[in-house]
Length: 271
Image 1 (cartoon, rainbow, N blue to C red):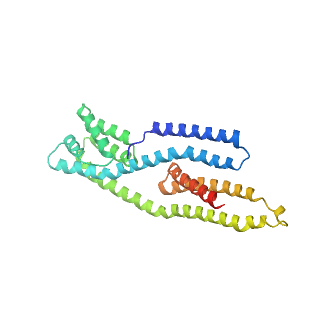
Image 2 (cartoon, helix red, strand yellow):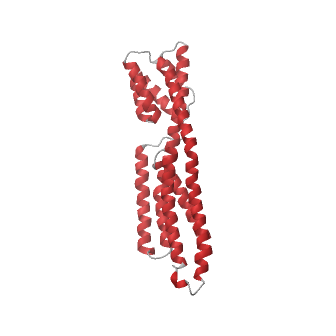
Image 3 (cartoon, helix red, strand yellow):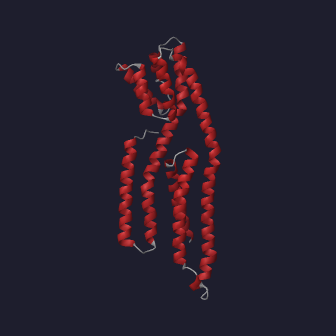
């Protein structure tokens, strides 16, 4: 997975929001009052969310790959030092191995040291570039050990264990919250099923009775109301799923897009 820069996310938001606004304004000017207007509103929402949802997911996978390979990197440095290499040589030797997304950043760190930077400066630059949760915790500890005059090489082995235990704790948390994310999806599809059954077995049949037709909303009004309800439900359910599953609201954008599309297809085809 490639790294997604903050500027790229900002550009994606600007472009997608601009396109969404164009679609929405066009719908308001040409389709206001028509049933198809609501479909264009949903299309505008999907256009606004989809690019950022994809980039956020790619960035999440990149950061996760970095954190998962940190213990392997630290162990490799320790093993190289035990053979008599210096710390700089150990890092250079470790960079020859494969660590997923971490490989490219590690090679850049080695390149910086070859240009004359010290190990601490190169490691500081590495931490600022990567900027994941575990690198923000581990890199300052290594730099502080170096500044205090301690044996930096002795820090990597306990650091590897610390990172590994943190990853295990994070995986356990995700395993515990995964059922709650599934509940969000199940609740939304139960809502869709209820809406479809209510519409087909109640509103449609009641509209055929002339004595009750005036006391009920029309089928077109009911269809539009249910469409609005499913859109709101999909949007906010997805954000809740992202917050529970991955800890951030932005992670819920992909869930919102999935639920929006699923709700649109279900209501479009079945009612």
